[in-house]
Image 1 (spheres, rainbow, N blue to C red):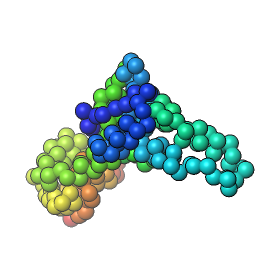
Image 2: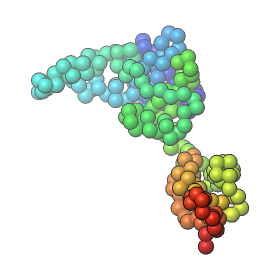
Image 3: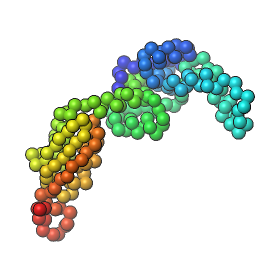
Image 4: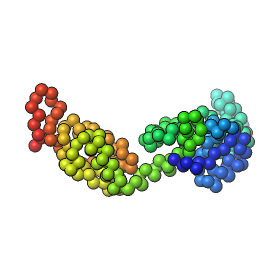
Length: 218
């Protein structure tokens, strides 16, 4: 997240909002109450509504009530008038995947990051989330070996070859048990920076047949 996130108050003037969005090259501004808690978000779409919803004599009657509400918002001259209230927020420990899902589900351009008391800790936008894919291949490989193979699957990493090129992980070799096979690919895809996972693995012991003698695969 951007810990030094710029924000607005409900009384911030319309023109100041525009200037801040353009000058700071941000996609949205959290709007704070006097107590420093997030009460809304202003993004470019909220501000463009003033230009978009000029008097339109051809407005359809069935959408008149909706248009009147939008026109009232477009007529606003401060952040409190034009902001989106009850914004989607995340906590500092929210995963990148969950933040991305929330952005997509709610069509949000930025997410305020808030502490437990509702105070602003920072902001996350789409560019922040994309930075994870710039992670170094060696760092990705090290996490796969330490966190997925050793800690999560408890299998010998010496028997599994892990190659990472531009975020694409290629696996070969052998895991300890057959039951690990359906777990390893999803676990690796969940590692930050992984673009895709491919390859083929065998197993040493078939532990999926209770009561039968488990023999090594050949």
